Length: 78
Image (cartoon, rainbow, N blue to C red; front, top):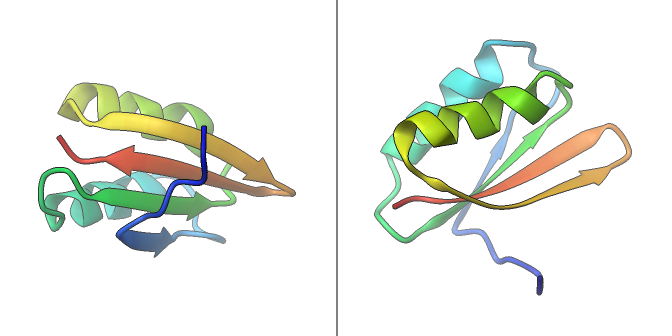
């Protein structure tokens, strides 16, 4: 997939569960439909927690990238 250009970036690095999920939900709630949010996390639990949140809410996970200990989720609000 080509580089995804997020409309907003949410930095949750250094935060542990459940904060990355809670902050992601709040950020998605503030986005307009069709916009893309990049969530950056260092919490290993986010690898399963963020996709589970998106599945419940009905938003689209476009891509997940790992760079060192930072996991980036690219989320499209539906």
